[in-house]
Image (tube, rainbow, N blue to C red; front, side):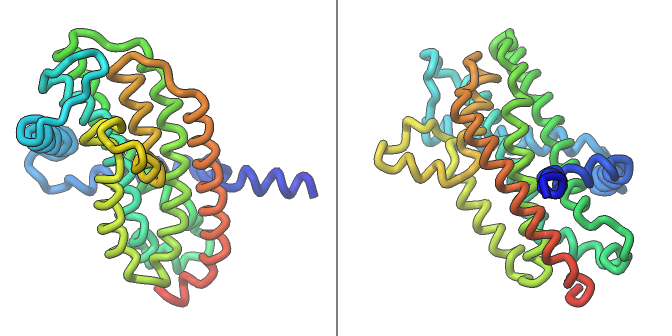
Length: 274
């Protein structure tokens, strides 16, 4: 019984390791396929976040005059770095959530194949989203060098911030990709939900800008602590809040395990519905 329980705990990641070659090839095909036929190709993955950064920075720092001042800085450049560090985290999260309900529906030919491991499809979408995150993160590091002329040594803790984020995304994608097969309205609902989560997250404003009695609402968004921690370690050179990070990692483990279990229990009916 103990061996079975241990195997069940490892199950969400065992498939990723077992089929890592297939996941890699499908992820690469997904990334390249997105820009196939366009004039500048993969360069769009570089320009898209820059465009969003320029728009959001102008609206929130110039028009609404929102500022982060942990070090007394009031410059637009400092605001842009703080905004972008949170924005790229949310972009990874929102891309996964918005695509998740259609993952199985977009691959009906794979559903019909008995031997194909359907549980790896969310990993493929997550891998594609993570590629775009890495491009945006590279832009962020270059911007830090240009604006502040330095990189904080605490940037080495970024992988520890990303781990809970990837776990949360994986768990939600397993759940939503399965639910989307049976309830086609899930895809439309996720557009509204991610829009709400976008503003219920301290991306465009600091947590301290929210009245104390309402701040708890921000933490109903599972990535709020990760946005805050990313800003701390990349922009401000502060150590992560280890307690908050550990709690978020535990939430990520729970999400991933429950999402995978749900997917495994419901995938038997996919072929009858797709």
